[in-house]
Image 1 (cartoon, rainbow, N blue to C red):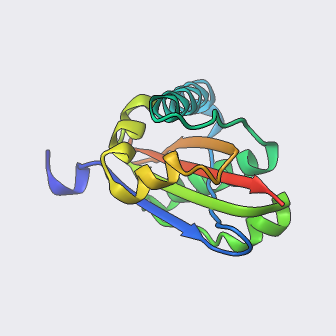
Image 2 (cartoon, helix red, strand yellow):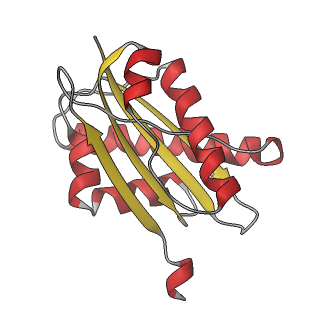
Length: 155
């Protein structure tokens, strides 16, 4: 696979009172595939956490809105990047957030396998700090999937 088509990953965390992060979604034409991608990523995330004796993460609407917006932004710009996480803390009422982003993974299961193979992403997925998660995916005009996984813990 040419270097420009290889799947890519990025992880981040922001510390405030505890720890922090965020992400986004898909165009209407890809809504069903994007929803399936996100749903399987959440399932795979919780399976990984269960394998490591971590609590199951539950969804949160505000985090999902942030993840969807970010995935769409990455897909529209056809590049992977982190968004500012501090606004998520205030907007979503969190005191800890974290984010994993990726591009080029064709399914939710595949992106979680990729994240679990990377130290920083794995740390976000397995962090005992987080209680909430949202995943969103969007397909760019370049045909690649852009994924955002946002973790949080309420203040």
